[in-house]
Length: 215
Image (tube, rainbow, N blue to C red; front, top):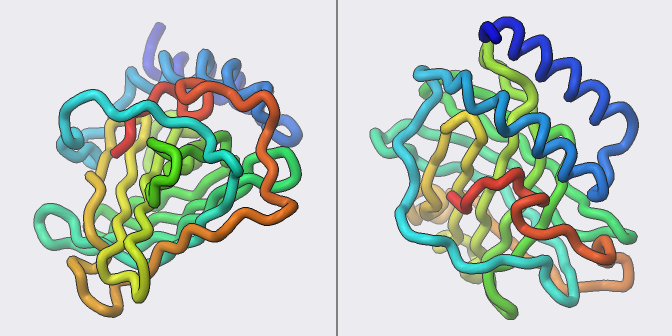
């Protein structure tokens, strides 16, 4: 199958699966449709070096579930800046959130379509991962899976962390906001409330994140 045929097939399957609200019960089907096809067209222009090695710790939906809000910027490996706004959590029996990410060095924009997972690596951790599918502004198969990592190290936020990984090979390893500057942004994990109920039963990590490891 040619790359153009693969793009056409990916687009067709994506439209079928995203017709209406993408619920967690359909995330497994989306993973089966997207992961094999997206892997064939990694754009060299947007590929970063792969993230930190080693197997990630097991992750699951926090219990009780909560939500996280964040925004700010990080410096890339060669000093360029990337801005982000990222939110995720559980709400009324579903996953909730949105990400908006801009790599200014590559003029590369990622905008989420749906959040399909919200995880913590360990109970009581200050680390949250938000997973889902997104579109980019690059000429590549759409959509892509994303997994972002948010770490809340307390106020005022200068020690908080952000990282992002996409299914097309793009990754920015988890790093301090603004290289520790007081205006680098903030990550805040909010306490649970009566509305922060996730899907039951919760999908597994691979289904929620399309098989992506944490950045």
